[in-house]
Image (cartoon, rainbow, N blue to C red; front, side, top):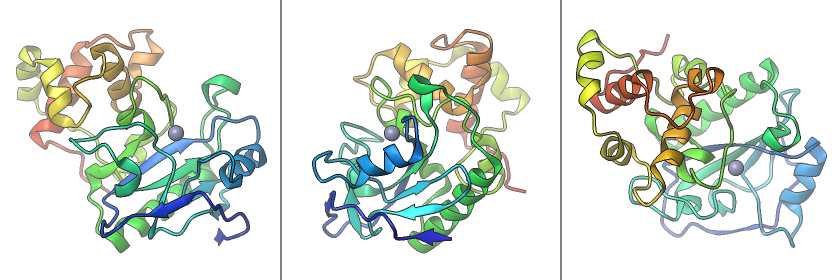
Length: 235
Ligand SMILES: [Zn+2]
């Protein structure tokens, strides 16, 4: 269910542009209401199209036809006005500052349904569902390394690499910096920040073993497979 209880005045026009990206965030505040109050406060100058609470409730703050203010200074595949080209979804979680925790099942069910609906209505490509950290690697960590990107990809939302044996061999010679740029990351960003952002999305193992920021073999192989278009099929 989508509730219009908390509409935000923080938006402007997209112009002729149709949304082609979905940017996923966590709220990064202690409470859901704290986050919502900020998103609807005219002085905050921030917003998103939706917030998904931990119980699965979806609040709509800004109409999809309008440009919400969620991505800030950002970049993806040459585009720097990410707000103009995207729909922004905030997912309630205290985040790294206030006690990062796993997203709930109710929440992920709502995020899945909402993303699928948005993708169908606007014809958004699977590969264009991204995290805030993908488009702003040096500034942002959200939605973070607990976000179940692989589960979403299995349901046709976003993509997940499915490397072949050959990919694993070829990936050893990958120019990691160029490959991250080819995938979409901003070449002006520090390499370590880009690797970490890629791992927050595609290599959660790097956080479990304390190797975040290092371009290890698993990172190379998954990036190689993504660029080769070797992707997990939705189930
Ligand atoms: Zn964010």
